[in-house]
Amino acid sequence: MTATAASAASAAALTTTGTAGAAPASTNRPPATAQRPGRELRALLREIDPARIEATIRTLVSFGTRHTLSVQDDPTRGIGAARDWLLAELSSCAAASGGRMTTELQSYVQQPAPRIPSPTKITNIVATLRGSVTPERVYVVSGHYDSRVTDVMDAASDAPGADDDASGVAVVLELARVMARRRPASTIVFAAVAGEEQGLYGSAHLAQTLKAAGADVQGMFTNDIVGSPTADDGTRDPYTIRLFAEGVPSSETPEQAAIRRSVGGENDSATRQLARFVRDVADNDATGMRIRTIYRRDRYLRGGDHIPFLERGYPAARFTEPAEDFAHQHQDVRVDENGKQYGDLPEFCDFGYTARVAKVNAATLWTLAQAPGTPESAKIVTSTLTNSTRLTWTRGPEPDLTGYEIVWRETTCPEWTHVVPVGDATTHEVDLSKDNVFFGVRAVNGAGLRSPVAFPAPQS
Image 1 (tube, rainbow, N blue to C red):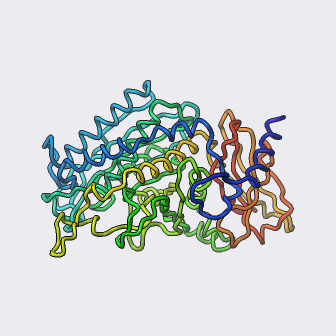
Image 2 (image 1 turned 90 degrees about the vertical axis):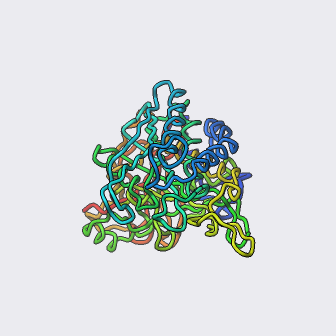
Image 3 (image 1 turned 180 degrees about the horizontal axis):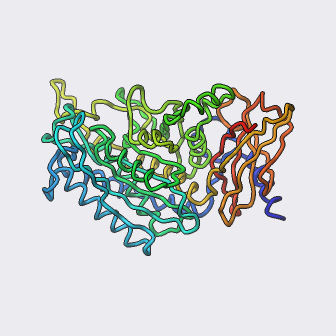
């Protein structure tokens, strides 16, 4: 069977077979674009260890407070102690990578600003696992290691920050540990950032550093409050993770907005395509999780570390537990007159749940790094009036690229419903009107891995 024929057969199977034996699924039928996890990915996921995640969370809590304004030169307490421990942990991961992973302290001095009363050093701990085939293509995963209590300016009181956000940092460390010994085709950046509670400062610095370097960041995920599936009323949803993904891009220009209003696409930003990809590869039996995509940039009138990436034009989304318990978030540690415990303490975390969240991240990042990149310059030709649709795109640089697929759906559908293999081409005509459906293009490699979908723009 030729590579093109194999690609077509595989795509046909994807549109009909679905996810047999899967964990709780988002609908009764997986999307047509779903990708089953292969042997390599399943082996990686089996290495994710809830005990290590628990140890990370408890160690970060042991520093008392990790407030951005807390002491930076005490070896056992404050954000400086947490910073040094995280660097040591990521350096240990790098030592097992055969030179493929490097670590750094990425610091700058934040001048006085809201919630920053005096010049303050803010430091991110960053580990970069360089890709072996297309290292210029970059994916980022983060959690924030700073913490807070009720008063966001209280840098002295104990601020355990177990769920918010030692849990997210634990996910990042566990991913770095299991991936350091492997060879991703593209580059993965693992980051523990500071200054989130004071105003997303560390993440903004990381995003701007990547932007200034011209990095081709094709996807970023922040894990923030991923430690518990228990809501404030005691109900549990242990097999669901929310994924917040904006529609209209934060970085949209007036010209781009005019095109969007003309042709549609409010639900087809690069971030929405990234969210669909997460469901394609991580909503299955291998992770044991259901992905609940929320069509919103973040929780209502709130924000997280993906936003600075969105503002700089990078696709980015936020993982957060299914329902927050606000008694264990942004609270002074105390027991009220009714005996209710407040505070973000590790006893309110579910380490098995966080391990499953780590599996969702791992399935997503590893597949992104091994699959082809999102197709570039995808266009719908509009130079002639016709009831068929011609699409064009630029061929990617990957040496194992075998072809492309056109995907489409009704304008009222949230997921891609049809896949059309078109082989190793850069143009294809579909006997469907561009007026009636939405189209997309995705790339396929020799291993059968698919890229995120590119949403085409009009080309006159």
